[in-house]
Length: 286
Image (spheres, rainbow, N blue to C red):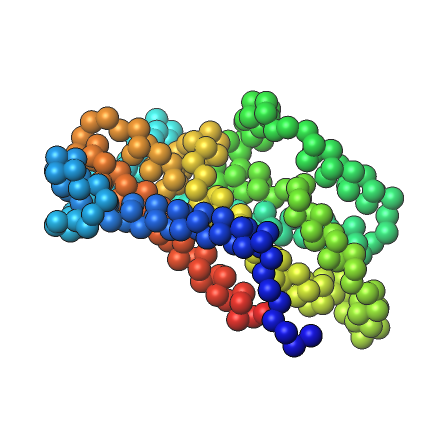
């Protein structure tokens, strides 16, 4: 029992593959960060694609912040949505949306685990069916539904779309909450706690680590999502939407490779820092 466990050949191969994969991802981010500080002449004419910048071009980021905008039309009035507003819309869309997307499956999973109704079987079956059915072809019905509910082109409509319990996270919550003893809830009921207090103060802390992980995963996905704002809230462009427009530019002073990569770094670096902070907090909590 005191002897160290030796790694077998399968574990060594797996560790080697994961190490190479990790290095490849970190190197791409590092290469993009260096390239974002290069001038166009340094990058193309002098063929300095992999070395350090000869001159650190901080003006690339200044140009992106000052000149990148998305032009929209609201109520017949044309607006230019700058990077600052794009970041604000991103924080609203990704921040609130990730909380809703993580809380909705917990809420339904808690109801299924806490209360034994016949309708619970229907909800669980519905989750399996929705996970099996492909999402291809749902864009048009969703657009029509948002139009009918007067929620199209609004952040509230995006929040309603994210408040969905179907998916793998419902099954994860259901498995955790289903294994919790009912004696805790019964003791709290005897002490005078209502159902809301039982859910918030007893059951929710049991899945807090899972909940925070789901929030982080969903936040990263929504932060990088440009298709949903492009289709369902086009006059509230997020930062990913703005960077998508930047990559499509063919004219102007932003149409150079280092400045386009600088825009991508504005999108990548904050979410990388947030991911590291969350993982560090989870390790300390564990």
